Length: 295
Figure 1 (spheres, rainbow, N blue to C red):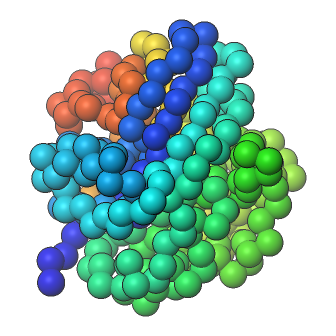
Figure 2: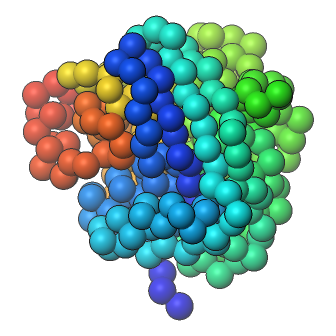
């Protein structure tokens, strides 16, 4: 059985993005954004996804990068419309036009991976049994809370309280939330305070993103790094890229360095439509130009 340094689990999404620049359609999905990061940073990685056969192009592109993809083909892909009324990436409305459905434990039961990054778009795509199966396989779980606090109400994604958080959070090694989601879970928009509350709920390391950067708390220290994009054309997929880059870098680095890498990779991703398309050299170059190394 082949082993991986990192695996990505999540539905493919066909994203229609509507903002001040107009309307465009991109291949989305947290698994897609994440696997692009891992592959371009040179990690042994795989992706488990669900999508319609008509969207097989995203599978082929990942395979061309060296990613092992394990797709399950469904009648429909998940199709989202993301509307950004302002230039603030934390302000958006997301409409769900179709769904590729729910993951089953057997889709991940044979994964041999050091880290598993779970990126659902909304509640119901990935359940507790899938996460428990990953833990039984000794995978460190990285989880984006968006897939657990967002529900579909009349075709619109709405952020709500998370009834299963007491069961799920102790399973998680790396937890990612944006400032809006953090407030829903903790009742505060103070990111450092929110991170400490989430850590007390059982997670090992907390990543909280906001329009200007990322904050990380590992139970001992708080680390922060800013985003420095030249444009915001690629802001969709920002959080997916950030947690993926952090989890990838944590394989070889401590939280301080992983925080900077996550911010730098995310900055480069926001300059382009679709997934991160840079190289490790591009990341190092940006770090040398804009960041102070944290010791």
